Length: 298
Ligand code: HMG
Ligand code: MG
Image (cartoon, rainbow, N blue to C red; front, side, top):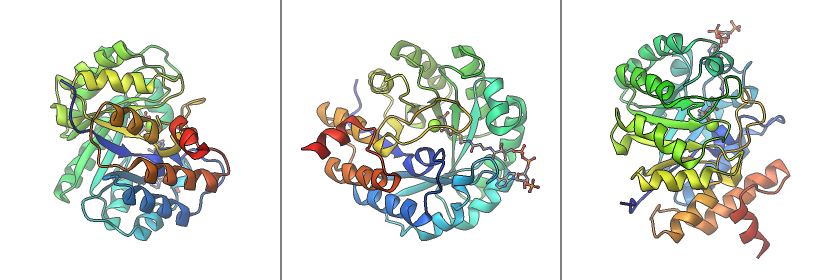
C-alpha cells in the first residue's frame, strides 16, 4: 500500500523565502537552487510572479530564473496569481506554473484580493494560456485544513474548490495546510475529496508544520498511496497573509522518515542538509529542521 517512491517538491526558494523581512539577494536564492538540484531534488518551486507590492521578497523573480543553471531532469515551477504573472513568467521558461486558490473565502480575499469564484475566473485564462505554451499547471488549495480568519474548514469546502480547479483544466491538485492545524484523519478526509476528482499521481500534500503535525500528516497520506509532497529545506517559510504561519515541513525531516521507511526519493540527505545549512547561514539562524540540526551537531 505504501508507495515505493515519493516525489518531494522543494518549495524553499519560494514558500521558504517569501516571508523573509530582510531582502535575500538573488545570488543566494540561485545558489540554494543549485545546491538543491545537486542534492538530487528534481522538482523545485523557484519563485513567484506576484505583485512586488504584496510580496517584495519575490520581486527578483526574473533575475532568479535567469541565474539558475538548469540541470537536466529537474522541473522548475513558479507561482502565478493572474495573467500578468503568467506573462512575466513565460519568458523565464518555467516547466510548470502554480495557480493558488483557497478553500476559505476569507483567506482568498486576504491572499489574492478576490473571492473564490473570482479567483477561478482569473485562473481559467491563465490555465489555458499556460497549456498553450506547453506548461503543466498545478493548483494549490490553501487553508484546506483550517483558516486563520474563518477557523474550521470542511471537506465539502475543499471539494468545492477541487472541482472548480478541475473544471478549468488545472492538471494537479495540491492540498495545502497553510497554518499547520491539520491532523492525520482530517488530512485523509480532505485528501479523499481531492482523490475523487484527480488521480493519485496528480494529488499532493503541502503541510506547514506550525503545530508539529506535518510528518504525521504525510504518513497518513502515504497510507492512502499519495506520493508527492511539498517541503522546504531547513523548514523555512510561511505565508505573509497567514499571521503566525511558520515554515513548511522541513525537507530533511521528510527525507529522513522516508529513508527509514525504505521509500526512495533520489535525494541525498547529507547534501540536502548542506543546502539547508547554506541558506540558514545566509539568514543567520539555525535550521528549523530537527534532522538538519542533529546531523550538523555531529
Ligand atoms: P490586486 O491589488 O487586487 O491586483 O492584487 P490588481 O490586478 O488590482 O493590480 C494592482 C497592482 O499590482 C497593479 O500595479 C498591477 O500591475 C500589479 P499598479 O498599477 O498599482 O502599479 N500586479 C502585478 N505585478 C506583478 N506581478 C503580478 C501582478 N498582478 C498585479 N502578477 C494580486 C492581486 C493577486 C496581484 C495580489 O493579491 C498578489 O500578488 N497576491 C500574492 C500573495 C502571495 O504571493 N501570497 C503568498 C503565496 S501563496 C502561499 O504562500 C500559499 C501556498 O504556499 C499554499 C499554502 O501554504 O497555503 C501556495
Ligand atoms: Mg505554503
